[in-house]
Length: 188
Image (cartoon, rainbow, N blue to C red; front, side, top):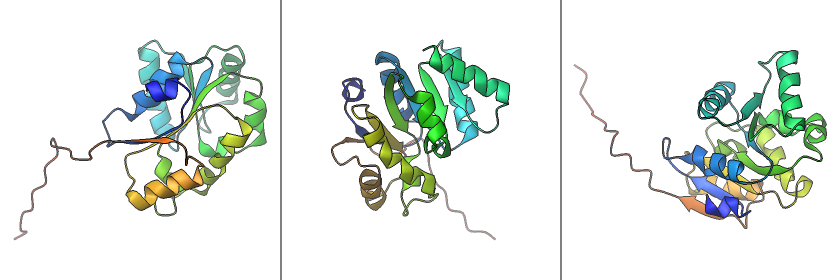
């Protein structure tokens, strides 16, 4: 978190439940501006936004499941500097409308959640993630953090290369989950 708060790019490889979200949520709150979280799932956006709001954090999402009025309210909050975190889908980030919406705003960071989606080797490749490499040139100096729980060494290298994170610090922890056990029982 200190690395990202200080403005550094990062690649975070932690298992599910190990605190990946805190690695971008806390730096986004600490840094000036709004943290933009790129997430592929509307349900995940909803869950995270709701949990953050319950904790007193100004968070919102923009996605295709929202009404026009809801989207307009979120855009207004963004323009007024009222949001700490904004969750969006990768398809939205790739649009000119998104770039126009955030032009001139202070952006604390870009968090690319489920970053394995950028990789052709990942289990759920989404071509829209490839467009996220342009964030470096469009928003120079804004830290980027790519996060995933599902990256073997090949996928990790693909994430780094395709998102232009060659200079990023890689944070990784053990994927050993002692709270999970497997039993094999012969079917009779």
